[in-house]
Amino acid sequence: MATIGIFYGSTEGNTERVVTRIQELLGGPDATALHNVNSATADDMQSYDVLILACPTWEIGQLQEDWNTFVDELEDVDFNGKKVTYVGLGDADGYPDTFLDALGIIHDKIKDKGATFIGAWSTDGYDFEGSKGVVGGKFLGLAIDEDNQKDLTEERITRWVEQVKGELA
Ligand SMILES: Cc1cc2nc3c(=O)[nH]c(=O)nc-3n(C[C@H](O)[C@H](O)[C@H](O)COP(=O)(O)O)c2cc1C
Image (cartoon, protein in one colour):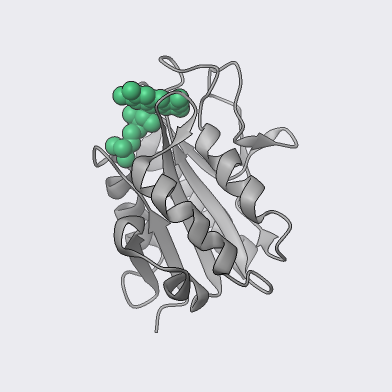
C-alpha cells in the first residue's frame, strides 16, 4: 500500500499536472497515492506516513476553493509521527504580495499538531515581495510558478523530489 499521500486542489489544472509528475518520480501509484481534496476525508489522510499538501493560491491570498472547503478536515487528523511537506503554485508577477500564501494558511492550522516538516525550499530565483508560504527564510515546500517560470518547473520538481527522498531516507 502507498505510504505517501498527495492531497491537492486544482482549479485550472496546473497543480494537478505538477502533483502527477511528483507521483511518477516518487514511485508511481504503488508508492504514492493522489487524492483530490474535492473528494477526500480526514480518514484518507490518516493512513499515510508522509503527506504532501499541494495548494495553489487563489483570489489574492486565499486557499484554492476545494481546499477552502476541505481545510477543516485537518482538525480531525492525528499528525503525530507523520512527515509533512507542501507544494505551492502561484503567480509571483501578478500577485507579488501574496505569492504562495496558501501554504502558510494551511501550515498555521497544523504546525503545532506533532508532524515533522520536511521539504523546505530556497527562495532563490523567485521574484516576489511577500509570502505567508515563507517561514524562517524558506518556502515551506516546493514553489512552482507556471504563469511566469514554466520552463523551470520540471527541473524544480526533479530537484525537490530528490531532496525529499533524501530527507525520508
Ligand atoms: C483571480 C486569480 C487570483 C490569484 N491569486 C493569486 C495569489 O494571491 N497568489 C499567488 O501566488 N497566485 C495567485 N494566482 C495564480 C494561481 O495560483 C496560479 O495560476 C496557479 O498556477 C493556479 O493553479 P491551478 O491551475 O492548479 O488552479 C491567482 C490567479 C487568479 C486567476
